[in-house]
Image 1 (cartoon, one colour):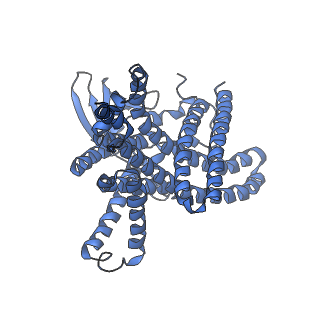
Image 2 (image 1 turned 90 degrees about the vertical axis):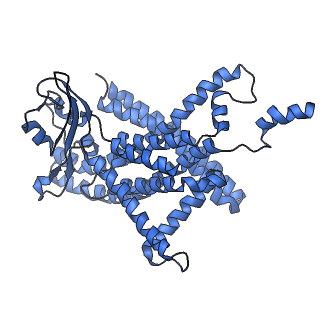
Image 3 (image 1 turned 90 degrees about the horizontal axis):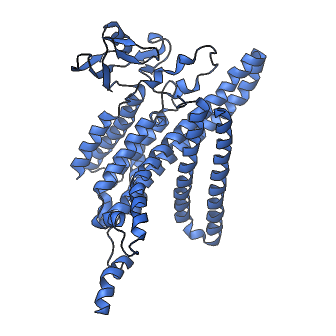
Length: 361
Length: 74
């Protein structure tokens, strides 16, 4: 089971590549150049933002296309950057700013590595490395035979025990809960790191991208369905203990419910992180808007308030980032727990179907 | 028009979420006052329920952002 989950997770990790070029299409509107480009700051890019003195502030990431030529041949091409792809002569930029093959044909799948994907890997990688480091210490006996040593291991133990006891064991049946702890802990740590990366200068919040959060929710969805018991599926397709005609209403609603749960998970994380980012950009943007409208002095004046407010917002974002990671993990555990629940024999549906018959007989 | 719709929509979304989360907070604080030893469990349930309401509210907020930016108007 764990092996399968691991494989599914790794596959999804590599599939979570942004499949569209839409982020390049924003500047088509033309005439009036906005003072601050809010969406450009939160959007996914084909480059990595770095300090200005390194390579002009942009480190370009590889572009990988799976595409079909005009003759109908399928091809896989990889280039070091967008510019290299254009220079090779096989691709051109169309009017909307998207990359298309020069000689006709179309791009089937865009496997390009984008900045959000890199931060996704960084967040998940950091979670895995820290966990392996802590696991090695426990293997040596530190934390089992003697008390945990050092700040890192203590923090790790607090977080891990929190996820195991308060998230997994509280919401999933006791004998099954421990099986899901690795998944829940990976999610919690990975999402926390991704959320908090967005607070670093030049970095991007990977979770402020719907493709990333949808991938994470998809993992939860797949695991939930695979851990569903017979009772769970019986409740979805043939709800026990209700009059027959009610099932015609209940079954569609239950099937819809299977999909709305991960959808809500994805939207919640995405919208929280995106709105936090937009809020900070908007408040800092006031400085430039005032400077543009009333001259530099007004800009400095507003700057004092804007920066003070941004500091408060940053503190709030640290809290929200951890809280959203917790909520995502908690809801994943609740959904898995609902699907994996074994119904006890004193359950009222069971009573209605089996025991009542025996009593009357 | 899109901007107007987004503004009104954002207002209604904030209204609904505010009422919902306010009612959760009200009953949670009342329950904690009545039974302080259960405050841990109540806080957990409160966060969980608030997260559900927040999810719906943020779905509305995302649609308002899309409207305001004119994405998907062809």
